[in-house]
Length: 436
Image 1: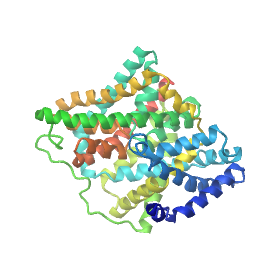
Image 2: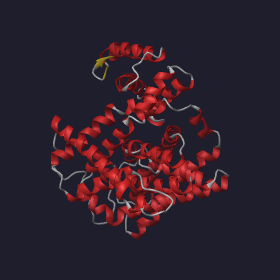
Image 3: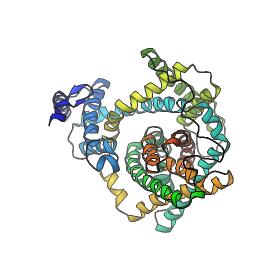
Image 4: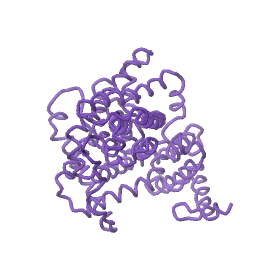
C-alpha cells in the first residue's frame, strides 16, 4: 500500500492520474471528447499510459506476453469490440493515427534515433560478413516458414507474409508498424487489422526466441568449440556500442534531432515518390516504401560522419522520449481500430504456432550455415544475427542476450534489430507488392 502511495505516472501521483483517467474515459464513452488532435492526444496519453502501466505490472504477463504494449492494444481493441467509447471518439483516434500522421511521426523518430545511435565503426564493419549472415537468417526463416505453411495447408505465401516477415521485422516501432502501412498500400485493406495480428505474432515469436537463446547458452557450454563466449569472430574483439563520448542532449538538441527526422522523411518521400527508378520507372510489380529509403538515408548520414555529435545525441534522445512516453499512447490509437477476433485467429489453428516456431528455427539454421563461411562462432552468430532478428526489437535483444548470458554483444544485436529490420522493410515491400 505504501508503494502505491509513492507511485507516480507521468509525474502525477497515482490517485490524481486515476481521476484524469476517469474523466477522459467518461468523455469518450459519452462521445463528448474533442474531435481533433487535442482530444485524441489527451485520451491516448492519459488512458494509454495508464493501461500500459497496468500491463507492465501484471505478473507473468509483463515478462512473457508483451507487457504494457500488448495489454494497451488489447484494451483498446476491447473498447472498440464492445463499444465502450463513442463512435466519434473511435473516429477521432483512428484519424489521429492515420491521416493526421501520429503513427508516421512515431516511426520516423524511432528510425532516426535508432540508426544514428549505432556506432559508425560497428556499422562499417558489420557490412563485411555480418549483414550477409543476417540475410541468410532471413532466407532460412522465410523458407522454412513457407515450407511448413505449404505442408500444413496454411499456404506458403500466407505463412511468409503473415507470420515470418513480421517476426523477422525488427520489432514494433520500425518493424511491423511501417509494414502495416506497406500492407495497406499494397492490398487496400485495413492496415490496423494486419498490425493487430502481427503484434500478437511477434510477441509469440519473441517468447520462442528468448527460449532458444537460453538453449544456445547450454549448447555453448556442452560444446565449447561452437562458442566464442561473447566474441563473434576469432581474433576480433566485440565492437563497443559507441566509441564516442556520451553527450547529454540539451532541449535545443532534441528539437534538432526531431527536425532532422522530419526533414529526412520528407526527402525519403520525395525520392520514393518522384526519383526512385524502382518505384517510378520500372514495372517490377512492387515498390520500395518510403520508410525503407529513410533508413538507407540515415545509415548513409551515420557512416559519412557529417552529422555533429550533438545532433546524433538529440536524435537518440528524441527516440528515447518517444519510446518511453509515446509508445503506450500509440497503442491506443492503433488498437482502437481493431477487433479482438483478429488476435483470436492466431490461436485457432495449431499450424499457426508451428509456423512461428519454424520461422525462429529457420533463422537459426540460416545464420548457422553462413557463420561457417565467414568463420564466426555459430552460437554467437545464431544468437545475434538470427534470434535478435526474430525477437521483439530492442527489448527482445535484452531478453535474448540476457538469457544467453552474452550482454556484451548488444552492439551486434542492435545492428540486427535496426539494420536487419531495415532490410526486412525492403523484403516486405517486395512480398506485399508482388504476391498480395
